[in-house]
Image (cartoon, rainbow, N blue to C red; front, side):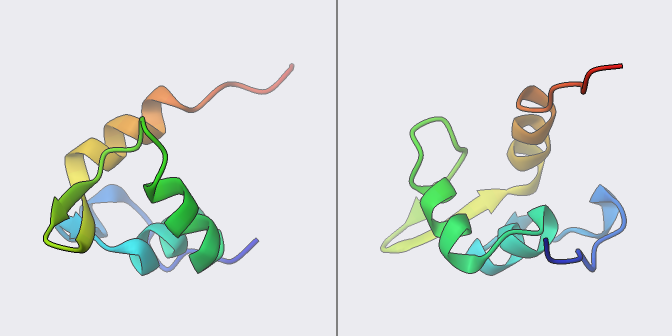
Length: 70
């Protein structure tokens, strides 16, 4: 797993590109692109460019986070 340079959501820009999504989640760029093509992932398409609004990204993370076994 790659280490994220972001320590909290306040450090994120308003829109995240694929490289930023990969950094935040600690995944590869290829995995980030795959994720951004998933139906339920909050992507904004501007021409051929895809970005993720910060607030939608945060909501997606919270909705897709499950607790571990205790």
